[in-house]
Length: 256
Ligand SMILES: Nc1ncnc2c1ncn2[C@@H]1O[C@H](COP(=O)(O)OP(=O)(O)OP(=O)(O)O)[C@@H](O)[C@H]1O
Image (cartoon, rainbow, N blue to C red; front, side, top):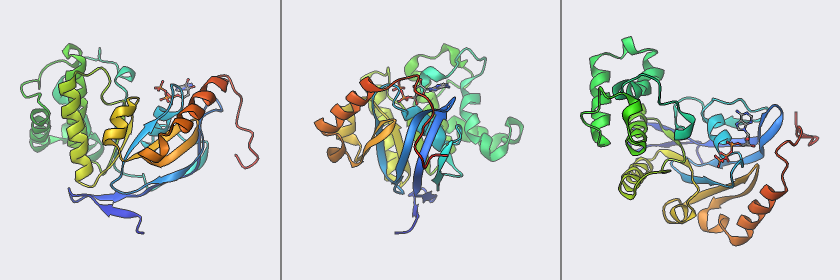
């Protein structure tokens, strides 16, 4: 099979391969010897207990965290990340339009170069996500749901073939969650690869065909029904209870 697909939006969508990927903080592994692939155009949930390494994996895929062993193939280039809302500082004095325009930063290298066409696109993205008229609002004044919509508007503008979502529906009312989920399905329908960290297993079973179950190690990766078995979930829980948050460096002989 070819390593690339063609997204409906005309973008080339890469296959992403993880080869023995280990990511650590102060040499303590958060993701441990992970092997597998995200097929072009796949829609995958990443699930697992707190501290299982899910956000670390997404940040590594986005190029924000350097693996200390193994590698990622195929993700280089246009990957868009929606970080966990709690990881963002909303006290920063910046308007909604500016936040969305950050989506163009990778292409233009700065606000000054964005120009009228870029601003118009940012306005369109705000309107498409239900935030028309919010252009000049400071981000600090938004509700949690409005802020999450704003981050989705930025993703819309980024127009990336690979979209990474870290707990995208947390703390949202049912209507907002449903609208943002519809956006996720739209991206998937366009042939983009979408990878989302989620805790709501009912949602995962209903809407996500593929699942990666992570508890530092990979406990299952494939069709959701085959991965989210009671036995696998029990293993994940037992691993969490057994693991030592202060564990030392990985000592597997094949690790660097
Ligand atoms: N910046 C950091 N410095 C040191 N350790 C970190 C850092 N970020 C995460 N960790 C540790 O790495 C491990 C994995 O964290 P990560 O945030 O990837 O887990 P997670 O599965 O996303 O958890 P949650 O479901 O709670 O969001 C945890 O033990 C965490 O304490």
